[in-house]
Length: 116
Image (cartoon, rainbow, N blue to C red; front, top):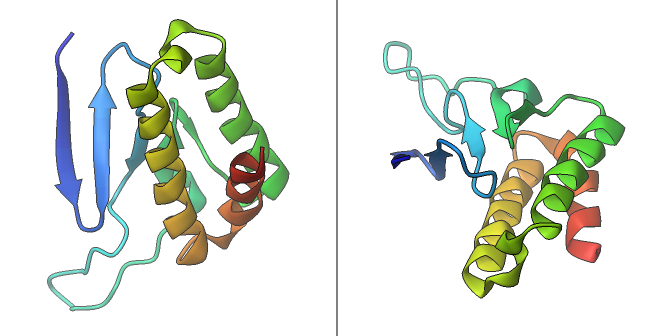
């Protein structure tokens, strides 16, 4: 199935119809300004999706979401490709950027994923 990608501010949203690898989406995009008021919009963890699941303000749930996503990839042929592992690492870097900025409840899960 075809895929499409769009750039939204500092985040690349990659939507791939039947592929579990690159499914980090942020709706709406972090860093977007309200063009009418000029004020930055506030975002919640539930605006970020990974592998079809949204994150929450609960750090333990976020760890489970991230680990399930990685485990689903590790036990397939996707993990055997350097290109795919690089894409996974890139997704973790994007999540780290969100954790360091507007969504600190992602920090523990992302830190654990990098440590593992």
